[in-house]
Image 1 (cartoon, rainbow over the protein chains, first blue to last red):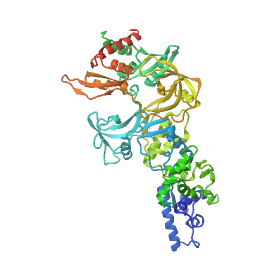
Image 2 (image 1 turned 90 degrees about the vertical axis):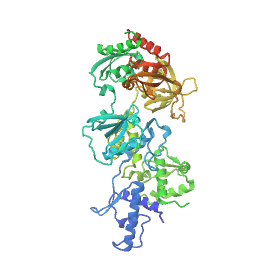
Image 3 (image 1 turned 120 degrees about the vertical axis):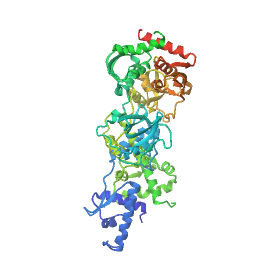
Image 4 (image 1 turned 135 degrees about the horizontal axis):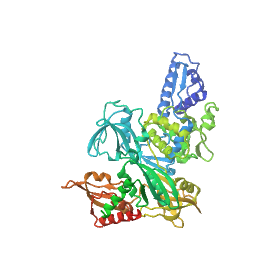
Length: 305
Length: 313
């Protein structure tokens, strides 16, 4: 006598193994636990009992296993819906879950994909900010949100969430100035609730041309509005990689002492600040305006002016 | 076997199936039983109809490769695929989908080769979670060399710039574990000939090359929960125009801001390490007054002068 668990799982295996629509009659003939004493006839009490049992089992398959086996009138039988992930996609996600430990998100239902990986071999740890969940919900509903940032109350349309240099940001359209703004989530000020989501859904539409990558490129040389300058910077050998990672640009010459890196500067003050983080191991050579920007600043600090 | 509800039986089966499929070489029946809080015999009874489903049905429903099996040495394994998981047509639940999407995006970002299977999976999850989520993991130039050395159990010669020095040092380390956390890649390692483990930031390696010392990577090197850098904290107090606080480079942290009668503000600025302190000091606008500590003004002056000398001014 098959247990309910065996019967229900056998039903799924049977439908999969047949690879074609299956009828209630075939199920009662072939699947352990559905046996009937005599051939089924539609409309009889026995037929109705088997049909109800099948409906309950189909509901269990859907709820507990995500397996959708449903009656299709067109083919006059029960048909499996196609899988959400194929085995290769699932394997890729399991490998990702084993490599990347995600902190700050609830684990999901027991037995969910990726829930049982050995996280002692993880190579990358990503922490998801606590406000991501509420903002994701608002984004899905296309609902505006309100929060306090830099001491001011902001009501914005949340367009996207992303990271830049390990910080989580919200890219949102601010209707009050009709501009895209980026908000660092850890600078949103605590309140009750910290983020209020409007009740009204579908309050905005994200434009088709919205560029997700550009929204979270917070490099000042990308978003800066100062006059663009083509800079040549000589960087000592031991600092070249770190310089290119921090500032971007292209290495245009290299020798035993170091390299020349060329880049376009669009935010002058942040360029100077970042250049100074190399403590004199990176020297701007041109244009003269940028050279002066750095040297005049240092002379003022050194008391030479 | 104690009476279990159908829901509980399904949950146990899902959890054990996940363990069998996601733990590389499967999981022992004993460990699986502990995980689901059952004794071994009870779990075995519960699994029997699923384990031997193919035999129950004479191979008509699923073949052996698509089921999960209990090996002779008591391990639950999935050999190729599991039909139950492969039949799921609904997406993972909300939390699991977000977790998988974040992991997938991070993996894509850090990958050094095409990931077509992952790309398709991520697109499907994007449709369920949101198509407007971005997660990036930057990869420093030396990462590949460090990962290879760690994987192969070979020492690594590095030219390394510590957080507190302005010139790099040459050293040879045993790279025990490579990981990314807090937005940076690190390797936990030991200098050759020493026993104490240290964390090295891979983006501070000016150059790397494989060394000659071989080692067996230990299995129990954990990723640290956090680094206690408070001993390196340096704090200065500044007075400046309110807008100039925004120009102070992060990762400096700014304490409580006090408004002064002259329109300026006063705040404490804390940064880790002397090298970063020097950077903050020379990044401040010249009009910013450094109030304390007493030697900060001279330190700012001296560092600015040192940089000018390097620049040939």
